[in-house]
Picture 1 (spheres, rainbow, N blue to C red):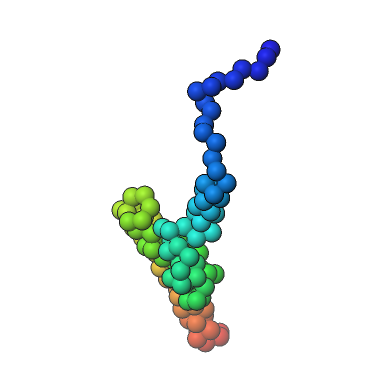
Picture 2: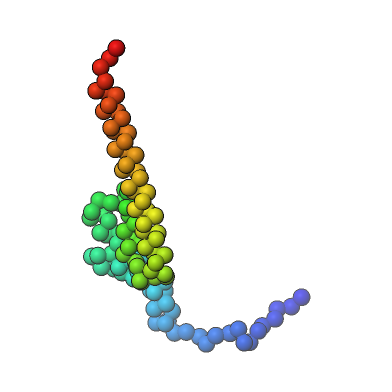
Length: 112
């Protein structure tokens, strides 16, 4: 079986600057995507670090989806995703408060 070359699949050669620009765009989509603020002071992850929210996955993801509304994909879907994460953050805090209240009640009870 021999090698078959399909001429219609060949593209025009690209210059080095064109290839470099394409590579830079690909890197920006990984390192600093525009839908999360680009490479600015207000890029989502930089703000989350400054606010100390990197450790809280629920709040981090909630704000991530709010930041990108209207910049990538369906805005309503982004808001629903943000709400999903916010609901879980609220549930986690509620559970923590209930556990704290139960512990406090148990320590306040007189011993028999």
